[in-house]
Image (cartoon, rainbow, N blue to C red; front, side, top):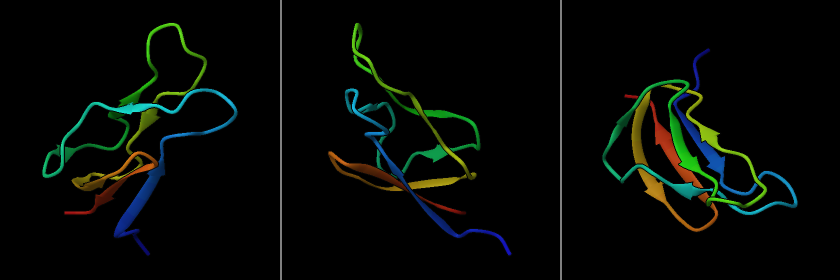
Amino acid sequence: PSVEKVTLQLRQHIGASAVANVAVGERVTRGQCVADVPPGALGAPIHASIDGVVSAISEQAITVVRG
């Protein structure tokens, strides 16, 4: 079964939260970087795990819906 929606957490560990580099309504592809760590900060860039459209962005997460 395929996943229809994913919520990607912007904070992956004790480091800094990643900052979204996409906008709501933007189409993304699996593997595309959707959030990056601020320069000089310890953290992890976030990549889309499915092809889809960004449906929501908050300080904590990015939601991507397949479509």
